[in-house]
Amino acid sequence: MRAPPAPPLSIRPYQLSDWPRLCEIHDRARIDELRLSADVAAFRSLPRTAHTEGLFRDRLDVGELDGVVQGFVAYRRNSLNWLYVHPDCYRRGVGRALLRHAIAFSGPVFSTQALLGNEPALELYRSEGFVEVERRAGRLAESDEFPAMGVILERRR
Image 1 (cartoon, rainbow, N blue to C red):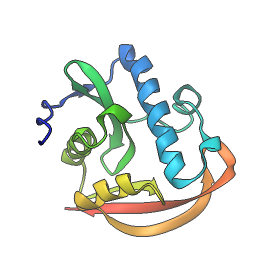
Image 2: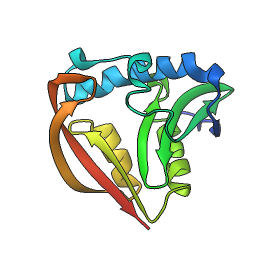
Image 3: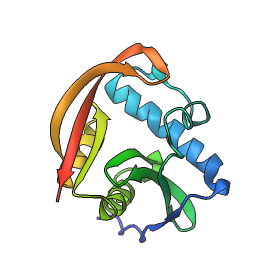
Image 4: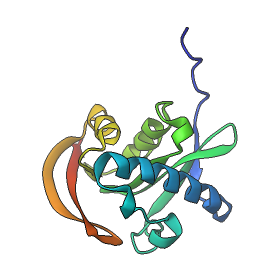
């Protein structure tokens, strides 16, 4: 038996009252991301990284299902900088809807990056027309002792 379709995602601008939920979403999903790609020991909480990694620098929107924030996306015209979904909502269309929302506001070239090994994210980006343009070895932000490989992707109109 197939699961019923998810209710439509409502996307709106971030509000200060969303902060605790964003922290929960990021912190749970980031551990999953690091488990697939680098090392969970590299985990740093959203309160520790939000400002230094530019979460509030550009547009920040949240996605709600039944009035509960289940994901968020931060982007500017030429780049997608953050996309996180609560683990309870993986594979329910939340990430795809947030990504498409950001794409709708993008310019002719829209780029993002994901950590090598984070196949769910890479598959999502590829399925929405992003192509890999580069791989870059480096260190995780706020966790310099952890090497990582970034996959740079672009989507062109």
